[in-house]
Amino acid sequence: MTTTDREQELVRAFVGLADTLVSDYDVVGLLSDLVDHCVHLLRADAAGILLTDPRGGLQVMASSSEHARLLELLQQQTNEGPCVDCVGSGQPVSVPDLAECAERWPRFVPAAHAEDYQAVDAVPMRLREEVIGALNLFRHRTGAMPPPDLRVAQALADVATIGILSERAIRHRGVVVAQLQGALNSRVIIEQAKGMLAASGATDMDHAFHALRAHARATGSRLSEIATLLVEGTFPPRPCWLPLPHLGTDRAPHPRCEYPREPAQSWIPPFRAVIMSVLRSS
Image (tube, rainbow, N blue to C red; front, side, top):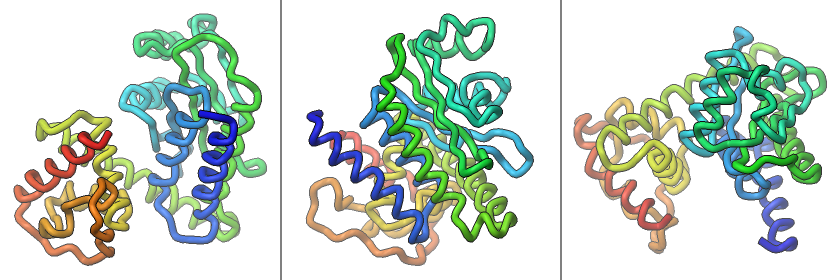
């Protein structure tokens, strides 16, 4: 990627995240876009996000891959790792060589090495004094991340944080709690939907998420809405699903609509076709 291309991609990334300040949005979709931007634009091989929940704990909210999701989940369960330290201190955590932190994080470091991650950085998702989570950046090679890349990562995280904690939400604490709890609930539904797709034998967990998000974008729906339809066994008739407009057809995206109920078993064939279309386009 040339310098000019990277600058254009950065502008698009910031514009996309800034849209959350002026329009309705899906928190899980916002954070998924954030980790994708970080992997695409920065010297990171994977990324993940932990957010605080209303009880003060941490929850996995987004990841660029299944391996990254499992490492975020490990940090949540063991209460150790760069994201945990970053949230606790509200300051960035940079580790050029994970081997040097084997005693500091005795469970996280071996798990990261098992996935061939050798270095990690975490930047806080913070507005003023309020820390709501952390963005983790994993790398396969040792060495410090260049300071300009870290500044971009922090800026992307800041914009996403402002999107979540809007001025209205800051004035009304109950709105913040409800919004974050809603995002956590959405994430649980999305993980269930990914598991159902993977269990069908059509794809793995990473491509299952890719297919879910591709269909949500193609139909103008929220990611959590599509996941809920899948988990509940309720889907629109086949014309609403296929073909996907972003896969090269000239059909316009299907407008958001109230989906009629179908028998639970009817979701498998159309969604399998969606997955295979996405895989062929990758």
